[in-house]
Length: 393
Image 1 (cartoon, rainbow, N blue to C red):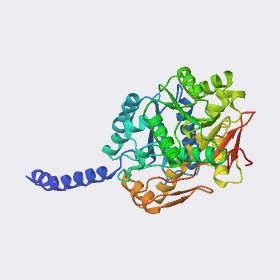
Image 2: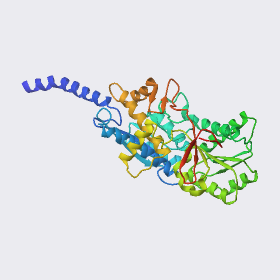
Image 3: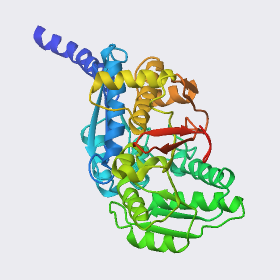
């Protein structure tokens, strides 16, 4: 009788205790444990765009390792789980779903490319997963309603406007052609160039394109060469762009070649070798070798500590900046670390000073930087930062 009484008396208390335990468990955010916060990356790690995903990953890992060595964020170590999507949307969708549903990451970070981001961002948005620092300047990711998306870099529209401004004003060119990747990425660039030219009463003298993840550019070269352009602006990844420029040099095509930041500057210079001299690339991050910038000093130290054999570069600096922003935002979260609190920390903080580069966010503004920088490849494969084309730095 007594045992039955105690069992009955205990049952409500036990039920309440279990409910409370369940409530506590329910509050724990996906991807966050007492000791870790897990991030996921689906990006090109191999193939014609492999240096881009690898560079972003390197920069992210350097930033995370730097934070982890100093105790992490709130005592939690930051981890990165990366999958190679080969710069193919269908593969990126598969890996993104794995990261969200199976690996249960806190946020997606460092995606690479417009066509892949176009395929995966809606998945992240639907799942309420932060989509942080994609390596693309596509305008659709800047839509104000995309409150789960956090962009660091400027847009392709800002880069293409800078191209045409400098080509027409600095060099006095009016015969401009374009080579672009035949997909959503390339067409965004094409649209930006057309708008910039239209503002100045100009039109493209020729255009050519190539298929993504190929280096089939000969046909495009023949079409563009016929127009005798003073400059060829280029929207693509480093391997096909390098192939085009090398072939153009062989046939004595004397044009100025101007590239978008996505090309992968360091990889392009390496692919081109001596053919790279004079090739122009717009950048969306500071010069990675300018030690007068505190951010660059910190980046170089973090990179060396993480991988002593790694050389500084534009892509890994961008990855590092994405990582630093993520860490700073996590540090500003009050109370439980949740996806919502993380995103609110970015929107409500507004300005993040990385030390020589300032990221500013606000209501309906999910893009941190607007700066566009000009660089030119030198004869030895290094880069020179310039303020105008055809003039001194």
